Image 1: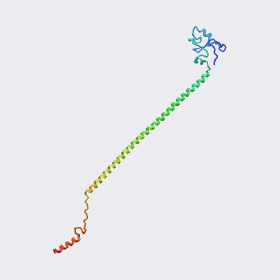
Image 2: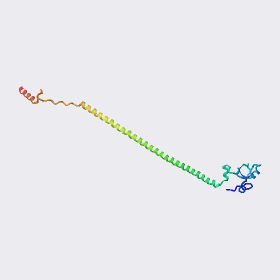
Image 3: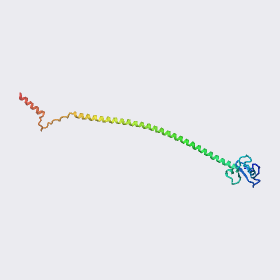
Image 4: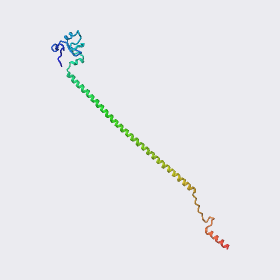
Length: 196
């Protein structure tokens, strides 16, 4: 902290506590006496721009009062602010990096799913072709079996139509009028004798 004094006549506040000092917009300090001497020109006696001042007191706006506070306080505040903003930048960078990593992982996962889908589709098409071939194979053999059965049925029907029925064996019982071979032979012998 500096000793408060007039930048023109160098009067010191510590030696004259009752003396009022003023702070200008051009960042100069003037006592009442020096301010009264320049009131006619309305210009700063040190840098010559238009003079606008504010009495130095405890009622000064915070933006102006900060010029009279210990700079180490602002240095510590600056360090805290700098650390806070640095941490926020680091957090933002880490978050962005993690998002990039997650996006890459999701992209790889999506590519993996796409490859799996392609393989599944190929396998499905192969299975469809195999099923179609099996159906053709089964249909072919079923049709062949039907034709074979029809041929066998037609053959049996044709064989049945041309088959000759076996004649019944004649009956030679005593009650039958048909003569036996022995009696028939005896009759033939007697007829021959008579002719002689």
